[in-house]
Amino acid sequence: MSGPVAPADAAPGEPAPVAAAIERHDARITEVGGLTVRRLLPKRTRRTVGAWCFVDHVGPTTATMGIGPHAHIGLHTVTWLLEGELRHTDSLGTEQAIRPRQLNLMTAGRGVAHAEESTGASTSIHAVQLWVAQPSATRGGAPAFEHHAELPVVELGAATATVLVGSVDGTTSPARTDSPLVGLAVDLRGAASVPLDVGFEHAVAVLEGAVAVGDDIVAPGQLAYLGPGRDALNLRAGDARLLVLGGAPFDEEILMWWNFVARDRSEVADAWRDWQQGDDRFGSVDSSLERIDAPPLR
Ligand code: MN
Image (cartoon, rainbow, N blue to C red; front, side, top):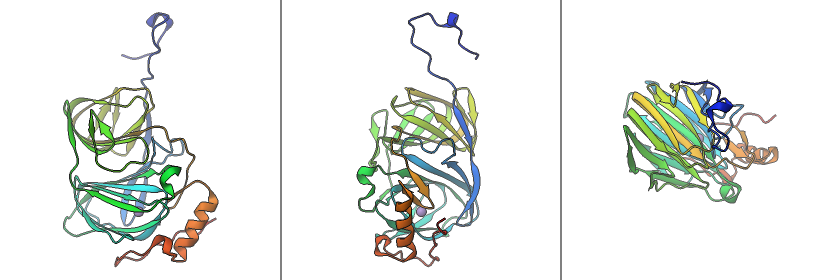
């Protein structure tokens, strides 16, 4: 049942109904490191969800990934695999295999470089990479790396939710967050109600299967956005895997260019010059892959 709410539907003095509609965005199909990806964020009309500012969904595919050393500033990269195995190497000296259901979280701060490639241990890959914009309070800080092989899991009706970052239903991830944020990887086989922080905005990214988000069906390649003011997210699916991403609306205007999350052009230009000149700011990465140049600044 649906339709506009008439004055007769709600007596004066009753609380206004929360908008039921979701905002749906289709992915842009692009290519990264030899792989076709569905880019779900940023969109021109939806740049951030909380501090989440980038969502790439890859696979499942039998192609192999090889992304040579490249630089980041002002963000966390969050890598999560459903299938396959990747090797992460970075300018902090980290070398870390990433396997399904493990969280890889790199903090760029003022500058970091890393490379990501398939290890050959698996013939297929199915993964997401997400970026989280760092707030001004921390974005000039030191780079860092965390690997979480084990994360807390919460049962919510027919959903099994792994808590990547933040908290749900009183269970909190050990992963670092620099702003109020939540990230859940959900396996769904039936109906579930996911409790939400009413101050957060949220998005659902479906990775496998089709999911009813309220009354809307969302499939892989689509992002469903839900504004603040909701205390629960009602989901239903036969058999699906999805991400629930949320956070306090990010109140800083960001400028994303290449792999940099900055605030203005001059900051991008400084990072561009430092990377192109091989400045110590970004260190060096022990990788057999070719270093990636930043595209020309216009
Ligand atoms: Mn990267």
